[in-house]
Length: 119
Image (cartoon, rainbow, N blue to C red; front, side, top):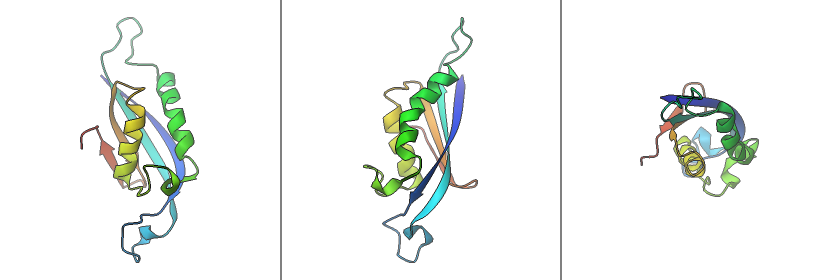
């Protein structure tokens, strides 16, 4: 069974490796939507894979690092593409969320990235 939690955060960024005339070369912001999925067996007594509150608590340190920040200033996110953000979040969540199965990061309503730990 797979469950998920959706959270949002606001952040600024610029992509340093695109041509100077590319719109993303300029500092701009996104209202990110982050979906975090965990998969595992349903506990027969509790009736759930894990408590949604525990999932939210695992996300809090990540959100504190990202929300209302300039992503380029965060070590490991100097080139903050959706792909790099998804991998960065995965690397920080997986040790505390062993059931983590995938991350979906959306920088707009129509654009984003799905990451499942495989490169």
